[in-house]
Image (cartoon, rainbow, N blue to C red):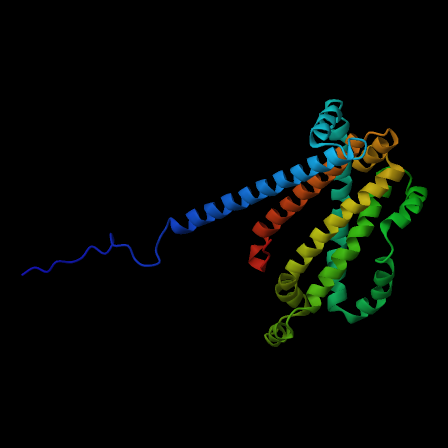
Length: 277
Protein backbone atom coordinates (compact mmCIF):
# COMPACT_ATOMS: atom_id res chain seq x y z
CA UNK A 1 0.00 0.00 0.00
CA UNK A 2 1.41 3.28 -1.00
CA UNK A 3 0.74 6.59 0.64
CA UNK A 4 0.59 9.77 -1.38
CA UNK A 5 2.92 12.48 -0.18
CA UNK A 6 2.14 16.11 -0.86
CA UNK A 7 4.69 18.14 -2.73
CA UNK A 8 5.22 20.84 -0.14
CA UNK A 9 7.91 22.56 -2.20
CA UNK A 10 5.31 23.75 -4.70
CA UNK A 11 2.80 24.81 -2.06
CA UNK A 12 3.06 28.49 -1.19
CA UNK A 13 3.55 29.08 2.50
CA UNK A 14 1.97 31.93 4.39
CA UNK A 15 4.29 34.91 4.68
CA UNK A 16 6.66 33.74 1.94
CA UNK A 17 6.12 35.96 -1.05
CA UNK A 18 9.51 36.64 -2.62
CA UNK A 19 8.15 39.30 -4.96
CA UNK A 20 6.10 41.12 -2.35
CA UNK A 21 8.84 43.16 -0.71
CA UNK A 22 10.71 44.27 -3.88
CA UNK A 23 7.39 45.16 -5.52
CA UNK A 24 6.32 47.18 -2.52
CA UNK A 25 9.69 48.94 -2.37
CA UNK A 26 9.51 49.80 -6.07
CA UNK A 27 5.99 51.15 -5.67
CA UNK A 28 7.17 53.25 -2.73
CA UNK A 29 10.04 54.72 -4.73
CA UNK A 30 7.74 55.51 -7.66
CA UNK A 31 5.27 57.17 -5.32
CA UNK A 32 8.03 59.24 -3.74
CA UNK A 33 9.34 60.27 -7.18
CA UNK A 34 5.81 61.21 -8.23
CA UNK A 35 5.32 63.35 -5.13
CA UNK A 36 8.67 65.06 -5.72
CA UNK A 37 7.68 65.81 -9.30
CA UNK A 38 4.29 67.21 -8.29
CA UNK A 39 5.92 69.33 -5.59
CA UNK A 40 8.49 70.78 -8.01
CA UNK A 41 5.86 71.52 -10.65
CA UNK A 42 3.68 73.25 -8.06
CA UNK A 43 6.65 75.36 -6.96
CA UNK A 44 7.43 76.36 -10.55
CA UNK A 45 3.75 77.29 -11.08
CA UNK A 46 3.78 79.55 -8.00
CA UNK A 47 7.07 81.05 -9.19
CA UNK A 48 5.56 81.80 -12.61
CA UNK A 49 2.50 83.36 -10.97
CA UNK A 50 4.71 85.66 -8.86
CA UNK A 51 6.71 86.65 -11.94
CA UNK A 52 3.53 87.55 -13.82
CA UNK A 53 2.14 89.46 -10.82
CA UNK A 54 5.20 91.56 -9.98
CA UNK A 55 6.97 91.75 -13.34
CA UNK A 56 10.46 90.77 -14.49
CA UNK A 57 12.04 93.79 -12.77
CA UNK A 58 11.39 92.17 -9.39
CA UNK A 59 10.90 88.46 -10.08
CA UNK A 60 12.52 86.70 -13.02
CA UNK A 61 10.25 84.06 -14.54
CA UNK A 62 11.33 80.43 -14.88
CA UNK A 63 11.91 80.86 -18.61
CA UNK A 64 13.98 84.03 -18.09
CA UNK A 65 16.03 82.31 -15.38
CA UNK A 66 16.64 79.30 -17.63
CA UNK A 67 17.74 81.60 -20.46
CA UNK A 68 20.09 83.46 -18.10
CA UNK A 69 21.52 80.14 -16.87
CA UNK A 70 22.29 79.14 -20.44
CA UNK A 71 23.94 82.51 -21.00
CA UNK A 72 26.14 82.15 -17.91
CA UNK A 73 26.92 78.53 -18.72
CA UNK A 74 27.95 79.39 -22.28
CA UNK A 75 30.86 81.61 -21.19
CA UNK A 76 31.86 79.35 -18.29
CA UNK A 77 30.86 81.77 -15.54
CA UNK A 78 28.32 79.44 -13.96
CA UNK A 79 30.59 76.40 -14.01
CA UNK A 80 33.54 78.31 -12.54
CA UNK A 81 31.33 79.75 -9.81
CA UNK A 82 29.94 76.34 -8.85
CA UNK A 83 33.40 74.75 -8.75
CA UNK A 84 34.89 77.59 -6.68
CA UNK A 85 32.08 77.69 -4.11
CA UNK A 86 31.76 73.90 -3.94
CA UNK A 87 35.48 73.45 -3.34
CA UNK A 88 35.56 76.07 -0.57
CA UNK A 89 32.55 74.55 1.16
CA UNK A 90 33.93 71.02 1.04
CA UNK A 91 37.36 72.02 2.37
CA UNK A 92 36.05 74.22 5.19
CA UNK A 93 33.31 71.76 6.14
CA UNK A 94 35.74 68.83 6.04
CA UNK A 95 38.16 70.63 8.32
CA UNK A 96 35.32 71.47 10.70
CA UNK A 97 34.35 67.81 10.77
CA UNK A 98 37.95 66.66 11.28
CA UNK A 99 38.42 68.99 14.26
CA UNK A 100 34.90 69.01 15.69
CA UNK A 101 34.48 65.24 16.07
CA UNK A 102 37.59 64.55 18.20
CA UNK A 103 37.08 67.72 20.24
CA UNK A 104 33.45 66.75 20.85
CA UNK A 105 34.52 63.27 21.95
CA UNK A 106 37.01 64.73 24.39
CA UNK A 107 34.49 67.22 25.78
CA UNK A 108 31.92 64.50 26.28
CA UNK A 109 34.36 62.07 27.87
CA UNK A 110 36.65 64.23 29.98
CA UNK A 111 35.08 66.78 32.37
CA UNK A 112 38.34 68.74 32.65
CA UNK A 113 38.42 69.37 28.88
CA UNK A 114 34.72 70.25 28.97
CA UNK A 115 35.23 72.88 31.67
CA UNK A 116 38.26 74.37 29.90
CA UNK A 117 36.69 74.64 26.43
CA UNK A 118 33.05 75.27 27.28
CA UNK A 119 33.43 79.06 27.87
CA UNK A 120 35.09 79.56 24.49
CA UNK A 121 32.62 77.38 22.61
CA UNK A 122 29.63 79.06 24.23
CA UNK A 123 31.11 82.49 23.48
CA UNK A 124 32.20 82.10 19.87
CA UNK A 125 29.31 79.98 18.61
CA UNK A 126 26.96 82.93 19.09
CA UNK A 127 29.10 85.25 16.94
CA UNK A 128 28.05 84.85 13.28
CA UNK A 129 30.81 84.24 10.72
CA UNK A 130 29.82 87.37 8.80
CA UNK A 131 31.11 89.41 11.76
CA UNK A 132 34.60 88.05 11.05
CA UNK A 133 34.58 88.60 7.29
CA UNK A 134 36.52 91.86 7.47
CA UNK A 135 39.05 90.47 9.94
CA UNK A 136 39.49 87.32 7.85
CA UNK A 137 40.29 89.43 4.79
CA UNK A 138 42.70 91.64 6.74
CA UNK A 139 44.48 88.72 8.38
CA UNK A 140 44.41 86.15 5.56
CA UNK A 141 43.93 88.22 2.41
CA UNK A 142 41.37 87.80 -0.34
CA UNK A 143 42.61 84.36 -1.36
CA UNK A 144 41.07 80.99 -0.59
CA UNK A 145 42.25 80.89 3.02
CA UNK A 146 39.84 83.54 4.29
CA UNK A 147 36.78 81.80 2.81
CA UNK A 148 37.84 78.35 4.00
CA UNK A 149 38.53 79.59 7.53
CA UNK A 150 35.10 81.24 7.75
CA UNK A 151 33.38 78.03 6.65
CA UNK A 152 35.50 76.05 9.11
CA UNK A 153 34.44 78.49 11.83
CA UNK A 154 30.74 78.03 11.09
CA UNK A 155 31.07 74.22 10.94
CA UNK A 156 33.31 73.26 13.82
CA UNK A 157 31.06 74.40 16.69
CA UNK A 158 27.98 72.62 15.32
CA UNK A 159 29.87 69.36 14.90
CA UNK A 160 31.52 69.70 18.31
CA UNK A 161 28.25 70.32 20.15
CA UNK A 162 26.40 67.49 18.44
CA UNK A 163 29.26 65.07 19.04
CA UNK A 164 29.61 65.97 22.71
CA UNK A 165 25.84 65.69 23.17
CA UNK A 166 25.95 62.23 21.64
CA UNK A 167 28.75 61.15 23.96
CA UNK A 168 26.95 62.40 27.07
CA UNK A 169 23.75 60.68 25.94
CA UNK A 170 25.35 57.21 25.97
CA UNK A 171 23.56 54.90 28.38
CA UNK A 172 25.49 54.72 31.63
CA UNK A 173 24.72 51.01 32.00
CA UNK A 174 26.62 50.27 28.78
CA UNK A 175 29.70 52.06 30.09
CA UNK A 176 29.55 50.23 33.41
CA UNK A 177 29.05 46.88 31.71
CA UNK A 178 32.08 47.44 29.47
CA UNK A 179 34.20 48.56 32.42
CA UNK A 180 33.14 45.57 34.51
CA UNK A 181 34.27 43.26 31.68
CA UNK A 182 37.74 44.77 31.90
CA UNK A 183 37.60 47.16 28.92
CA UNK A 184 40.10 49.99 29.03
CA UNK A 185 39.08 53.63 28.55
CA UNK A 186 40.26 53.55 24.95
CA UNK A 187 38.32 50.35 24.27
CA UNK A 188 35.18 51.83 25.80
CA UNK A 189 35.57 54.90 23.60
CA UNK A 190 36.11 52.84 20.45
CA UNK A 191 33.59 50.06 21.03
CA UNK A 192 30.83 51.73 23.06
CA UNK A 193 30.92 55.51 22.94
CA UNK A 194 31.84 56.10 19.30
CA UNK A 195 29.23 53.71 17.79
CA UNK A 196 26.51 55.27 19.94
CA UNK A 197 27.60 58.78 18.95
CA UNK A 198 27.73 58.22 15.17
CA UNK A 199 24.10 59.29 14.52
CA UNK A 200 24.72 62.55 16.39
CA UNK A 201 27.91 63.15 14.39
CA UNK A 202 26.05 62.66 11.10
CA UNK A 203 23.32 65.07 12.21
CA UNK A 204 25.95 67.63 13.15
CA UNK A 205 27.67 67.17 9.80
CA UNK A 206 24.41 67.82 7.93
CA UNK A 207 23.64 70.92 9.98
CA UNK A 208 27.18 72.18 9.49
CA UNK A 209 26.85 71.67 5.73
CA UNK A 210 23.74 73.86 5.69
CA UNK A 211 25.49 76.61 7.66
CA UNK A 212 28.46 76.42 5.30
CA UNK A 213 26.20 77.47 2.44
CA UNK A 214 24.96 80.40 4.51
CA UNK A 215 28.51 81.53 5.14
CA UNK A 216 29.91 81.14 1.63
CA UNK A 217 27.69 83.87 0.20
CA UNK A 218 28.76 86.56 2.66
CA UNK A 219 32.40 85.51 2.38
CA UNK A 220 32.43 85.62 -1.42
CA UNK A 221 30.53 88.90 -1.60
CA UNK A 222 33.29 90.67 0.31
CA UNK A 223 36.43 88.90 -0.85
CA UNK A 224 36.07 86.98 -4.07
CA UNK A 225 35.91 87.46 -7.81
CA UNK A 226 34.65 83.94 -8.52
CA UNK A 227 31.90 82.02 -6.75
CA UNK A 228 28.14 81.91 -6.45
CA UNK A 229 28.10 84.62 -3.78
CA UNK A 230 30.21 86.85 -5.99
CA UNK A 231 27.93 86.07 -8.95
CA UNK A 232 24.85 87.11 -6.98
CA UNK A 233 26.45 90.35 -5.83
CA UNK A 234 27.84 91.26 -9.26
CA UNK A 235 24.46 90.52 -10.87
CA UNK A 236 22.79 92.85 -8.40
CA UNK A 237 25.24 95.63 -9.29
CA UNK A 238 24.44 95.18 -13.00
CA UNK A 239 20.70 95.04 -12.33
CA UNK A 240 20.40 91.50 -13.72
CA UNK A 241 17.66 89.99 -11.58
CA UNK A 242 17.65 86.89 -13.77
CA UNK A 243 21.34 86.27 -12.97
CA UNK A 244 20.58 86.72 -9.27
CA UNK A 245 17.90 84.04 -9.54
CA UNK A 246 20.36 81.75 -11.31
CA UNK A 247 22.88 82.14 -8.48
CA UNK A 248 20.28 81.56 -5.76
CA UNK A 249 18.75 78.51 -7.44
CA UNK A 250 22.18 77.06 -8.18
CA UNK A 251 23.10 77.39 -4.50
CA UNK A 252 19.94 75.53 -3.54
CA UNK A 253 20.56 72.76 -6.07
CA UNK A 254 24.20 72.40 -5.01
CA UNK A 255 23.20 72.19 -1.35
CA UNK A 256 20.50 69.64 -2.17
CA UNK A 257 23.02 67.48 -4.05
CA UNK A 258 25.63 67.71 -1.29
CA UNK A 259 23.10 66.76 1.38
CA UNK A 260 21.75 63.86 -0.68
CA UNK A 261 25.22 62.48 -1.28
CA UNK A 262 26.03 62.80 2.43
CA UNK A 263 22.80 61.03 3.36
CA UNK A 264 23.34 58.17 0.92
CA UNK A 265 26.98 57.66 1.93
CA UNK A 266 26.18 57.84 5.66
CA UNK A 267 23.18 55.52 5.37
CA UNK A 268 25.13 52.86 3.49
CA UNK A 269 28.44 53.11 5.31
CA UNK A 270 27.08 53.62 8.83
CA UNK A 271 23.81 51.70 8.81
CA UNK A 272 25.18 49.26 11.43
CA UNK A 273 25.42 52.19 13.86
CA UNK A 274 21.73 53.02 13.48
CA UNK A 275 22.10 55.84 10.96
CA UNK A 276 18.86 56.12 8.98
CA UNK A 277 18.45 59.16 6.75
